[in-house]
Amino acid sequence: MVRVIVGTQFGDEGKGRAVEFLAPHSQVIARYQGGANAGHTIHINEEPLVFHLVPSGIIYPHTLCIIGNGVVLDPEELIKEITLLKEKGISIENRFFISPYTHIVMPYHKLRDDSNHSIGTTRRGIGPCYEDKYGRRGIRLADLSSPEILEEKLKHNLSIFKSLPQDSANNLEFNSIYEQYLSFGKFLSPFVADTALLLNRWIDEGKEVLLEGAQGLLLDIDHGTYPFVTSSNPHSGGASTGLGISPTRIDEVIGITKAYTTRVGKGPLPTRLPPDIEEKVRECGKEYGATTGRPRRCGWLDVPLLRRALMLNDIKQIILTKLDVLDELPEIKICKEYKNMGAEWCANLENSEPVYETLPGWMTSTQSIRKYADLPVNTKRYIERISGLLEVKIMAVFVGPQKEATIEL
Image: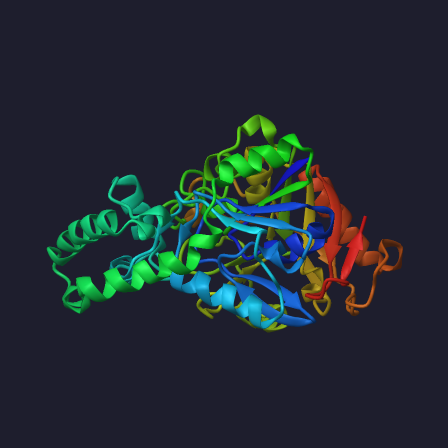
């Protein structure tokens, strides 16, 4: 069985938490796109830790983990994560593999990203790295073990960057970057492998495989709220290109959906909450970017946007996350359609007007509940209304950040 998990909103839906839930039943976990601009929070001995690159399932000793060619890799960040895992007593030797074709985020990518943040990026160099990839001048992980190739590419790219009118270009010095990235390549070399070959072989062997991306469908470069999007494809199809497997090998796509809507950075958010409710939800849900710490904007659940995500990914069941954040709200709204636009996707979100359905809240904590039957009546009504509007099954509900705070349906 090969499953893909996809964020159905603007990212931050709790995909790391979903991997924690699904990983005990998976043998292989592979990351297929994005970079260190996304943060997945996982728990080790109840301690929350944020990982930006290592697949979330690495904490389970039985799993084989992959970073695929579709990821753009910040080697310095990855080395920090590997070091942290070792400090926590988690061995990754012979079970963590990186594609040699993964493109590398370089210092000039971060400087270029920092000089142009009009769309609200994390300034981690992700977009500029993808630009170089598609401009056929990118530096790949394999190049860090080839001094001559690295020298040639680095000199060429630095000459391009320094020709641009940026004061920061003067801070880039070839020798220091060259030596540093050669050392990164040496550190990471034991983990480099033909990940496409490994993954296809493991699928042939019948292993349970879980594929994870970063961000969410509405930030997809092709299908999201352009131009306020990321530079890759969180779409389930990105798993095929980002890992080197045929689309026909994917058996199921599971959507990860937050019980409300959040968005970090710029871009439209039609269902944004009134300031007083937004602040309450933000604080209760700790809605601050895992990578940058920026406060996320919060809104009511947006059904038209979710329907688009479910359709594009052929999602038949979802995991509903952070339901407990709504515990103290006396009433909860769902955007079921847009005025004059109906219940389907609206390309002009800036000018869309949500039409709401209001449901009564439950005004009691759900964090200690572990069985669906024990949920308050109004909580079950909210869950069932979401399932009905989306015409999708809900396989699990998360009512807290801890692994055990899960209700399986």
